[in-house]
Amino acid sequence: MKLPISIIATGKALPAQRVLSTDLDAQLGLKAGSVEKKSGLMWRHFADNKTSQSQLAAEALHDACRHHDIHPDSIDLLICASAIPEQALPTTASAIVAASGLKAGIPAFDINASCVSFVTALFQAAALLQTGAYRRIAIVSAEIASRGLNWQDHESSLIFGDGAAAVIVEQGDGRAACIAYRLETHPQGRDLCEIRAGGTRRNPRTGLETSDHYFRMQGKPVFKLASQLMPSFMQNLFAELDFKPQNIDVVVPHQASHLAMQHIKSRLGLSSEQVIDIYATHGNQVAASIPTALHEAFRTGRARKGQTMMLIGTAAGFSIAGMVLTL
Image 1 (cartoon, rainbow, N blue to C red):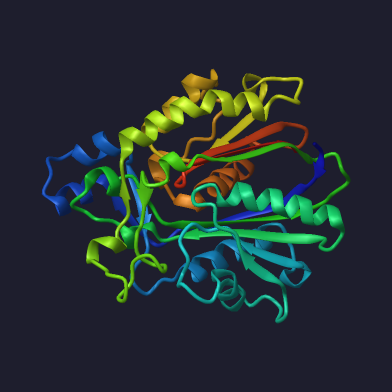
Image 2 (cartoon, rainbow, N blue to C red; image 1 turned 60 degrees about the horizontal axis):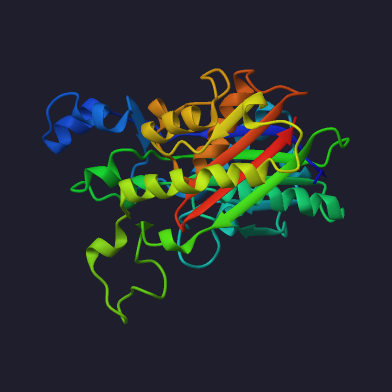
């Protein structure tokens, strides 16, 4: 596989409210230091009730365009890669077009593969660029996880943060490319992470409880399943490549949890210098997690032309996605 794709711009947006773990200790009536010890987070950002996902997405897109001197009208296609929609209908992509002021008539659609939505969308963008139908594509992920948290369930609530990130891509000259991609879905883990409401399964006609609107997760079974499946997944992802994960220059994982970040380093034999780890100050931003970490890799100079990069993550469903890029 070699799909030419060049990342020409990245941007991010965080809500103004920075919530310290000590703030949550007080809010939840816990002993000082409890939240940081349990979550591995120093702080995260939460949106207020007036902020929308599309607003955050627009801010991230504007940041990418402004920082890299790209005119928004040069974007041919917008893909929203978010796990949670702003509303059931219409698409979140259409809301982002409106909030960002992109030209009327621009094609826009959503891709939802839960926490690995961005990796999935990036592969779709590479394939679409190959057809020549589009020359410049913006992929935006925006999440407000804080609105779906049950604060009585510490395992499912303490690790999350809100935010958005945008990436703009072109086909480029062919030197930068996606050289490996894999997405696997294992339905035996489908019920381990879920929000039951929001679709046709749980609603006022079929039966609905307040708790159905909250995120719920069975952390230990998720971790166990990921540990079982990851070795074979990585073997298949790298099957056609002439190097191993340990040889990758920059690894951008889904910032799932403090334990998950440690696990991916130890299981894949990666050094801290190879892995982009922003978890302690951002938390798990759901689908916005990987593109936000990707943005930090480029803005801090840790990702540069000529390097190899791997994007890797697990998601509700239960899915695993990975991509290897030459930059």
